[in-house]
Image (cartoon, rainbow, N blue to C red):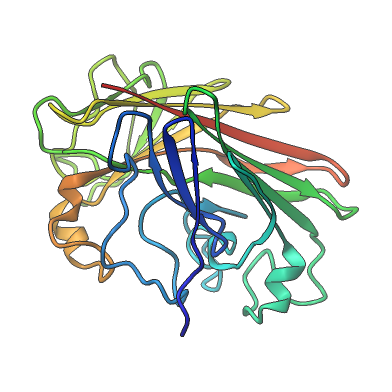
Length: 299
């Protein structure tokens, strides 16, 4: 099978690379830096046979799994080839429709069956751009092109490069959020834990899989390690909706069972994933919802 196409944009001393496969952002190198602050597994599949491990996958129409045994984890948008609408010296725009999911021969996928009987018609549009300061903007719009109200979830599954075992590492900015911890320490086999996040940084001392629900927009900071600087991700929705955030690291045991994860790769990454995932979102026919994140870096 052929490998996915890569489009690279360089502007204002920064650069990013993106592929139409999945509308997937692969790298972002801020000004003054020589390496991407996004993590991408060196062993991920490049033949488009499965989703890319790393970068920024687009999760739509759902995050995680729907228990219908046929929906793919995190939805079908990251498994489709998007259409490039424009490519300039500072930005790339792409689009994908739910009808493309049908044309590309995908199977019947749960609440979004890939056949003419599907009641939902969605158009996704994304635009990735660099500002004059070299900051990265990533906006995804969901438009309901059908007549019936459409259920969905939307999440940007950011993989950041970080030394997760460095004592200076930590994720902050989520204090006061309500947390669903799917991997609570000391409660193995006892189910999830629920609590309010305090002011302490989130660290990786085992598998981390926590969903943070708050109100309004979200801003999180990732101190990537002693010598790797700080990444900041600021996210808002238009029209306004509550933006949630997932923090994830599989740690050693789980990562070891993933065929597309670098050996010990979990040590070099952290996922900080903003999205509209507090239950199913609803959008009426003819309406549009935008989720926008801005990623910045400081040393």
